[in-house]
Image 1: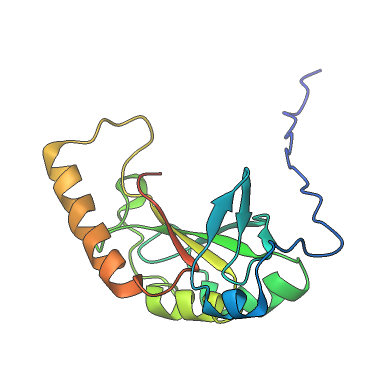
Image 2: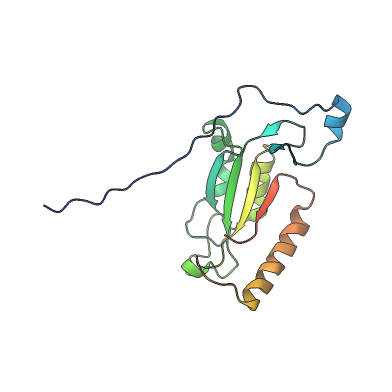
Length: 167
């Protein structure tokens, strides 16, 4: 008798502290803070609360599926308790794996970033362009450099936008 393949799902759980852990900042120091910081092996958000990333990946501009990522911010934060999303992003021609899928409901990266970061959720922009295991060519590196220069300029004042340089 042939047996059906078994799909094993792996997940991890992060235990979040029941009460936020604050750095020893004075109220004036807290109000002046504008960025994340790493200290003593912990990440602290812009107001000094310990930040433990908890979230998932979503499809973004020119990616594989036609999901509207921007509409999910509220439910991901309230129903799932997520504070982080990783947005799979490809260049206008689509990722190497799926170049045919370039028009999605999530092609507006600014709208996605605004939807999540306005809720103080971290958005990790993932440059997902290359096939896994591929060595980047000089042209790939030039394209990535241009992409990241554009993103850095667009989001330079938003501490809730982080970069995943190559998938």
